[in-house]
Image (tube, rainbow, N blue to C red; front, top):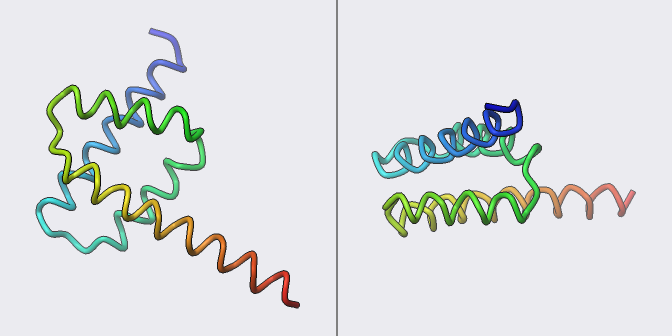
Length: 88
C-alpha cells in the first residue's frame, strides 16, 4: 500500500471517528480541533470523495451532516479572522 493510500485511509478513519464521537454527544470543540488538522491535508474534492465513501459504508447521513456543520464553523472562523486582519 502506498503512503498516499495509507494517508487517505487514515483520514477516512479519523473522519468516521469524529462522526461516531458526535453521535455519542461529545463536546464538538475538541472534535472540531481534530477536524481542522485533518482538513489541512485535504482538498475539497478529496473531502467530498471521503464523505461519499463513508456514506457507501453506511455511515449515517445525519452524522455526515454533523461533520459538515463543524466544517462550516471552521470556514466561518477562518473568514472572520481574515476580515479582522484586513481591517487592521
